[in-house]
Amino acid sequence: MSIEYKTVKPDKGIAEFVESFWLLENTSDEEKEFVVIPDGRVDIFFCHSIFEQFQVVLMGLEIHPAIRILKPKTKFFAISLNLLAIEYLLNESISGYVNKSKPLPVGFWGIAEEDLNDFDSFCDKATAIIKKHINLKIDERKRKLFEMLNASRGSFSVRDISEAVCWSSRQINRYFTQQFGMPLKTYCNILRFKASLSHLKDGHLYPEENFSDQAHFIKHVKKFSGVVPTELSKNKNDRFIQLSVLAKQ
Image (cartoon, rainbow, N blue to C red; front, side, top):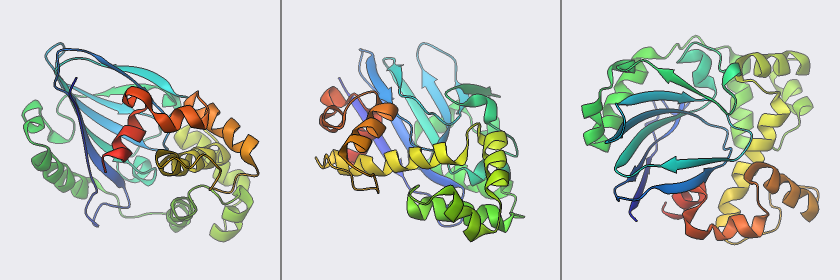
């Protein structure tokens, strides 16, 4: 079975809004089952398949692991967005799409099925389009909020963040709930889990992201992946897609 993964980091001009571009393709004649685990990103998928028409889908934040099937001869090109992009690039709320997807119009951002023939060209075209759509009138509290979240990988408390950005905890949580469908603390926990993936990939089964103890770490990993750290680390048959991608980077 042949599964191809590829990720590309964005150029500096859009890095505040785009986490990465990536490719996932099943070139074989067999379907592949895998698990998607929460990683704090919002994805726009452009899908080509011999089974279905060209599709564009927005996937909201995820808080639970989800089993997905990648059909034979199916290709996904995707844009992984940082949360600042939801308001200042897409100009909408995704609060109703936690663990859910939303179909976008075919032709979204002018990207067509033939743009999935070459990944590098897709990235170049998407980058140019994104630069045209970005709203640069950004609330500096929000900019600093996301800078702190990314730098700390979710380890700061809501209170620490509130004091640093001069924005009350109540207002921040209202913003997160209305904009993304979850309170800030939940999102911080997802970021801490995501940060632990690189350690688990390398076989480090003990907490390295400010977890209070091993039991807390195991509980945290199991909540977001459905399995204990040992099983997640082994990633048997490339079952956990994000670990498989990390292993190839």
